[in-house]
Image (cartoon, rainbow over all chains, first blue to last red; front, top):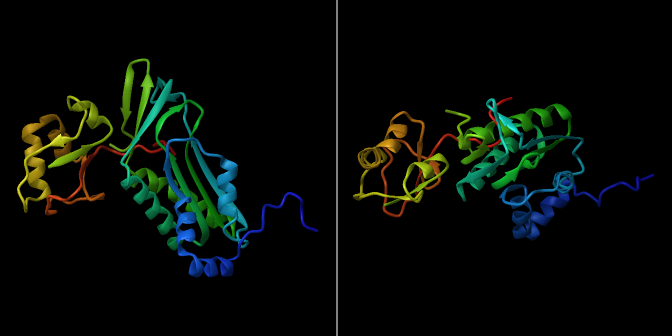
Length: 171
Length: 86
């Protein structure tokens, strides 16, 4: 018996391919929602649904959520703000998703990063990876966040008691 | 040529806006770096130490990349998306 908690019917790969042939623009739009740099907060439930609804073959989903903490490098942090290179940041996140889909045995990956002012405790970055099995999902998820930090042009400024400080995580 | 600035570089330049530097057709990234070193020594020092990278058309450029007047050029300080700790 089907659970009442089931999400709306998820597509299998065959349906997805049919739709790709029939309406490539709709598919492009869907894919653009899987890679975003945005000002506003995101709903983890909605993004999780977005990934799991991509295929009925997904059996394991790994997620990384980065949030704003109140302490950094021994200093109190009262708030932060992210600067980004519009266009290049999106391009790099897209490359990360595409490479993850090529290099790992996964079915779908979502990569989001916020910019602008972010209060302590708020969401900053979200990676969600869906695979048939958990090991591949975990591995790809870790790779995505590590790669994001290496190649994505996003910069963090923290507000501390000493003033505003640009953070250099990878000097 | 206009050069986009991000992150801490914005706070190093009075006004925090894009850099405007003279540029001749056919120059390479290294020529641009020399001009920046001359006109904006603080930024030039970071470029010299490779703490700041140059991007051309949204890709990291090499020093021998040849520039075109239509190119989109930016100076990129070290990235800091998320956190550096594992």
